[in-house]
Image 1 (cartoon, rainbow, N blue to C red):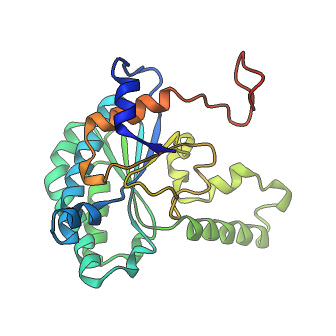
Image 2: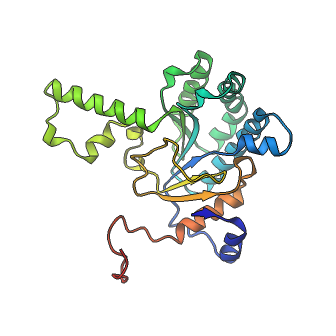
Length: 262
């Protein structure tokens, strides 16, 4: 369903966040930067620049609310198909982002992590990103997890290859492969018990995963919102958390005291 803010304001005006029921892992597809810029007769890169500022806003809001992992779809394996000048700008954004935001990241005790084919990005981009990971490694608060040059299908294929090699070398029996085994061979394995998002949000009005965390989101709650990413605010982010808290997550079972629902 599309998350309509005007309706949510009517439903949630008098609601307050239950700090005991904050989703531990929130994943976000940051869509709408280009359309935001086009509406203002600006180049697409202006939308990406503004979107970078929103990342800062949302990251701080999530950390303050008690989210433990915030995974942001920063650049997909398919995004290389975009115009060369736009891709070049996007590859420079991490440097601009971390140059200005690292002090606040440290002040908020946020730890930076990366998933994706990091070896496939330009050397300068890789250096900046890995430096941010290193600088924040000792932080113990929220994990700000960027999916950079990431594609879920490639991630799953690579995991299958790793398991097949382990079987071939006698290190893993086929009958011992379980869902947990698969999860351990995905890029999100470094997140441990927090690998699977409780809530997946996509801005921009589209209703698809676009090759993002397809295995991990099997039981995620989805919110698709019309709001373009550069228009997202901390208040709107709070509204998505409130909407999440109104959901009844059953994981394929029956709701307590509500056995007529499947």
